[in-house]
Amino acid sequence: MTTDEGLRLDAVEISLGTRRLLTLDRLVPPGQTLSVMGPSGSGKSTLFALIAGFLDPAFTATGRALLNGRDLTGLPPERRRVGLLFQDALLYPHMSVGGNLLFGLSARVTGRSRRRAAAEAMLERVGLPGHLDRDPATLSGGQAARVALARTLLADPEALLLDEPFSRLDTDLRQTVRQLVFDLVAERQIPALLVTHDRADAGAAGGPIVDLGAGAAS
Ligand SMILES: Nc1ncnc2c1ncn2[C@@H]1O[C@H](COP(=O)(O)OP(=O)(O)OP(=O)(O)O)[C@@H](O)[C@H]1O
Image (cartoon, rainbow, N blue to C red; front, side, top):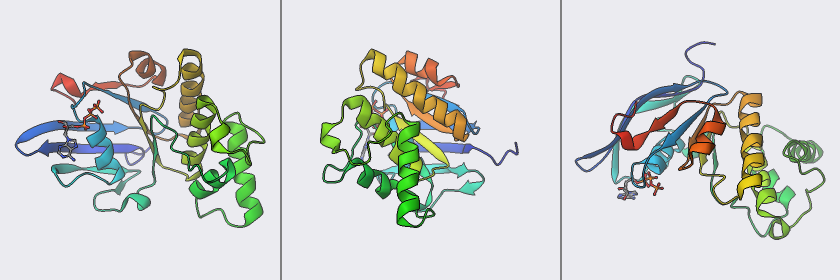
């Protein structure tokens, strides 16, 4: 592995006015999940916004985020190859499951039948074979979370930002879905960041934990 691989947060510092919100200097190697913890307001979502490319202009940031050697600074969000998963699945309600997946699918996969096959294969991998024509409104919370994961991965991201994606799932489901997520992170060798308030989630991620509330986050 060269040092270029993975998600590098190179002397990142984010401030809000005169208040320094966070500083972070880390490499998240391929296949590893760095868990980001910290109290409300410590800057977890702001860090994700910086990496994904939608930092509010109210903040000032120095340092760089590099993904597999590419400096993300100044790139529009759609060119960053960063996948996001949130608390809510955020599926488009007016599209079928397949429509949602094809919407996310990388433009590099061309041709209707190849695109459908890629979506079906990904559904199968997340444990929902044959669900392409389902209406998202009829899915359980766990199924919707799996579809959201499938949609994110179909875009072929080079890094994953997981913003409390398990917090709405109850215990058993939570364990199954998070295992699936971390299995896929390892399988695809993608670096991932997980924002969570839950030590068990951070433990399940298996990687290092950074606490933004501790004042010495690095
Ligand atoms: N658009 C904005 N303009 C000004 N201040 C903001 C803006 N968005 C967030 N903040 C402030 O920036 C700080 C960090 O917010 P952020 O949402 O990143 O925290 P967080 O750790 O994700 O919190 P939570 O756990 O509640 O999601 C907070 O003090 C928040 O009030």
